[in-house]
Length: 173
Length: 256
Image (cartoon, rainbow over all chains, first blue to last red; front, top):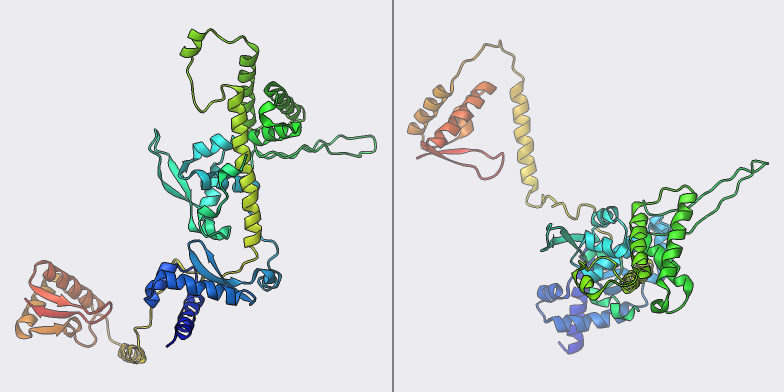
């Protein structure tokens, strides 16, 4: 087999794995399944992403993994199929709270309220319910309050690979 | 949300016409403060803090006039600001006294503290807006739908074959045929002790047998139940051993 054939063979396997998985698959996981190095997986994925770019289905990296999803330019057709219109987005207050948690995790409710100046209990329970945040442990300080952190679902909800993709807070004056 | 307000003030005019006065919606006291600072449109650190405080207090009193329930958060901030303002007006205390003053990191002690807090809040408000943009973009991507019971462990039936199904059906039919028998009911008396000696006797003659071998055709429920209790007791007393391959399978009884 020449290099081209090998790469073709692996892309086929990766394609099948991505199709069959209900959630993003980690690159390390793919490498383990095919028994090749993560670097080769990454290289093949790069080429696959390129090949898929103009198709109805795209391949993209999200939430610490790789997944198949519809081409974003076709969103109105998919929305029509699902019979959804601009589905409920998070409220301004919820987004603000998420921003504070994302940049300061692990953080207690009191610390969040200190920044927002408003009671936040209800928003936190909504975010917990939506699995956008999780209880990440207990504070070392007096009271041993719960501390909160973001989840993988958070990354998926905002379509980002990892928290590093969020802009540097220093860029905000 | 408790801390969001839309004001509707209806005034009845002669022709029962009414009009509404609307105030902007603020997420909380920090949001209101940020709005007041932004209105000034100059470098935030050059702003007159006492002017901002006055405007904040004016706004609160306006809310009161319009008879809205002002959330406690707005009032807490108002009192904090009043304290800060009083400090600004009074001459600074002598050095010695100032050193003794208790200092709490989280409270607003100086105009800088207030501005820093507003700036910090502004950062996260902006990031919140950015997240909103990301959310909107993400809504255009549709990943493969997740099966509803992703978290629930799905029961696997793959291990069962057609043969198992046939056997199950045959067993059922057999039981069904057995049922059609009429007889006069007699109160049966069988004790656990009786069943225990019955089992131990059987085990002496047969080294290995199925639990159901203990009973003859047309046995009673009572006898089976008593037999089962007797079996459990014998296991407890370590008089015999039992083996069952899987649930609802035959229970094999062995001598010790």
